[in-house]
Image 1 (cartoon, helix red, strand yellow):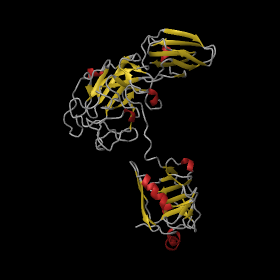
Image 2: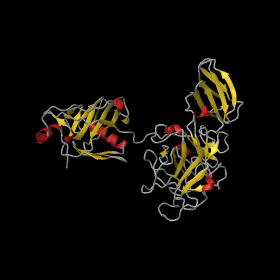
Image 3: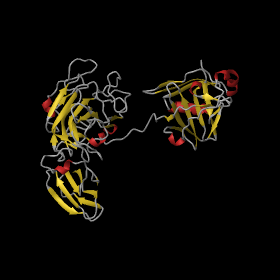
Length: 473
């Protein structure tokens, strides 16, 4: 069993295992680079552990109020705060140090361990060694680096800060009717088109049983306008897939470009789906879905989901209200032209928290939604996909298809829209039908247009050679 004794004992017993050479340049880390801190107080220290194989060194920050504190107290505080970190030790000896998360399972290996304070060999066991403000405590397998005759160890493994194991979850927009809700009503004038073809690959009513497939509705129910009714839908089943196309490609505009409608009866029974898009029908890119819904207990048909805990997942709102998506999020994706989206794919979230069957968000977290839905209408129930300001009828001026470069805000707007211009430039405002409805000359670098007398819908602003599309609500 590996043990670490106090410094003076190590010199006597284990010197034959150590290199008598000048240590290589020592890896270190600045307090400014630490992302996760434990404890409170005006003093601070850093704990680093190097696992050598694999070549990973991780760092924690520790704050304390007294002038000095024991290394063991720092390690115990980190163990309590961070469930990924653990160690076994006492009476000056440490027998084990581990780090375990979803992707890393680390344990120190080798015969004897480095134990340094600020680059020098520690003078006492970990439960009698004091540290003070600014100290750097380093542990590692002795094979990871070199030591000189005075037991000063060094290694070159880059040190990376650990992430916060319990970050504050993001708060997204909430249910229909709450402030800042982003839902799109199925009769919103900003909608200028709907999906025209649909292909369904049904999933099982219950992925575990692999028996009956979901069977409610037909592909025709996903075409044309969505409504507030809950019956004219097609059910995907666990992991089922729908691929929809459109008369004209969806293009990236300012604001949301399309919206997906599901038939939830209320604001809390939410059946979710991942959304992917393609510009060639072959290569698909998924919107970065986030689910902060707790996974310690399975959501059932009598459970509920808090809409503020999910983002970039279709099915977030009740029937008649669509979840909007902005193609600009995928701007840097490979094999995707965000100004020529021809296909939208929906993949039902398998809401089980059983890792053997579960689906995960873009961070690897399980997505928990009602499960099982073991009936013909199980899974995500697709009502339609609406095209917003990314789709334009043929008779709209061709300049409207150009990449939006004009800076304006807010978008969507309600009463006014403000843009950056140059004195003397002509500003043209078009409605969704391509009709010129306002023309003015900029008399300032910042121009505000009054939109109160115009109906809700999509508009196009042209200022010189710059164009932007926006929505008025």
